Length: 146
Image (cartoon, rainbow, N blue to C red):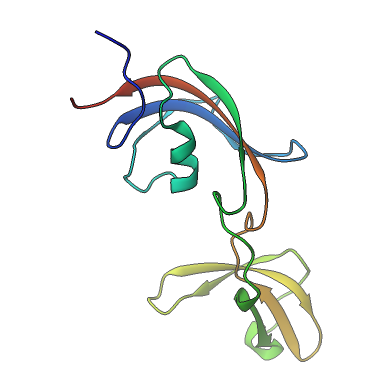
């Protein structure tokens, strides 16, 4: 029996790390239990999944992920100016993450960019939007239904 290669609907167990281009660690499970997902189930962004296709158990790689493959480009339409009074007496500072309710009453995080006495500019883009990333992977197990 030959080793199975990662393809559509395969169950994959792996260790991973996501880093910025400068090496800053964003997320990793190398010091924890490996993650398991099924290709195409939506747990992993499609751009990350595509880089794994054809790999097999035991493979290791460091893959460059462009913003378009990762979390997309920053969208200027996701920068919103909100009246300052909607923040009541909240202590604001640039970089502060604030939780807002979206149209479906889900949680929508926004990052405070700047503020004055009248308005607060909030960035609703994903924090990794527009960033090139390094995706380090170690494939532990691949299981595909024949």
